[in-house]
Length: 187
Image (cartoon, rainbow, N blue to C red; front, side, top):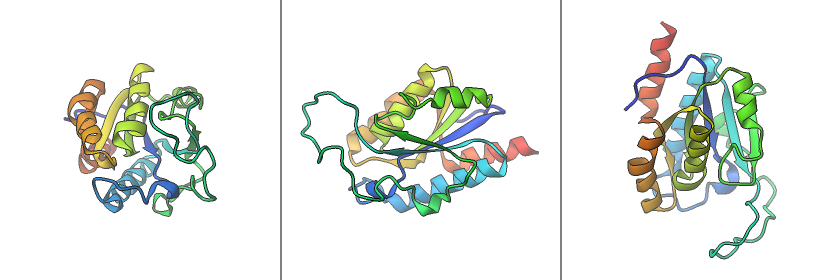
């Protein structure tokens, strides 16, 4: 349940990029993208930082899961969806791990702006969103998760993150509730 947004809260939108839109998500991706775009508009209207994150690879190391075609991605794979309306003032983070903070300098950039809280949305709930939220929490940010502005291709991973993990990392709420908190602060 949402209670408050800090005066300098940033929005982090994870992996809403062209190359991932054909994945078999458990929820239709279009409403997720629309809600993320609504959050972006609300944050920009209040001149709060917007971070757009894309993925261009994977972390090195062996896993039990077979590779997914190596590190070569087709042209345009990492391009942000046009619905997000990328703006020159947005912070753009390109990552090669699940989380948006590892090796990207995002922590320092946000703290230099006075950010003390982040709202996280995007895909996939159990990987990119989860890892970004965990990293933010570990770095001392207050964390809010826009649970209707995220989805996953794995129902169990999505449900576990929403029900068990996210309440331990911060607060959860809908896009509408987050926008309402932002609007109430402006009064």
